[in-house]
Length: 374
Image (tube, rainbow, N blue to C red):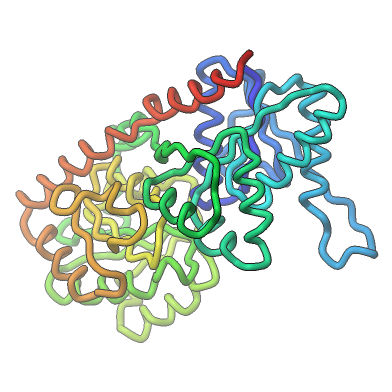
């Protein structure tokens, strides 16, 4: 099939999932067209089966804010007609579902019927979408979609609670390419570059927004290193980075906390990690936790949103209430202080992650696309 994918081209989970999905679909012979304002960060496979079309927004002095939704809708119309795209898959309700609906109506006036799938990822619903200013448009866009999917049962329930939805919502969870993480494990892990053999390596990966509670990551590590020697690897960047770096200095951890910034080689960093921390205020799914588990890294996380659907209590790691730094540190030490216990959790984390392998999940999307064929 010829499939158009619309997403945010950023390090956030929705963009990563959309990109990985498109690449996986292309490997199965589908023709994929990414349509967005910049090439997605993980899209390095452009060729006969994968194409990127940039959405340009002309600057015009009349507009205080440039109308991206209008430019996107027009681009979708042009690309559907030019490349004979058969289905659009838009990730993130705002503004992509709205733009897809407008494109659908414009194409219908020319006798072209283009179905579109909307995948809900999280903050498009729980934070932005529920705002009174956007709620009517988001509600309309979801209900106007030809199919709607959610990345977790928790997010589905939030959507039905916050919006007046008449459309059926199918839960298709996020996924990872297990092979990619297994290959990283098989390569030589350069652990010695970041820590001594006696030190445990704790890792956190995020976009460093307030909702990620990155200060809690440092606070948990502070308690861990009082009992066990260790290093904390902070991967990512964002508005909270400067304050988090200062917190590490204030706690006397500047030699033990390493800020690596953004990275496209997270799997290579996770391959030598012993524990992953994800104390977020909310997560619709917890893709970062799943990526860690795929590398055989147990997870200490908050028990909010869709995280308990991924991180299984007492199996792949432990859960704690949001902000409960003491419990998170206590459970982390329980895992890290004994090699036998740590290895058992590592094995279990990998087994849980295997259930989210990309091949199984991509098949579900393929079946959804095929259902539109007449």
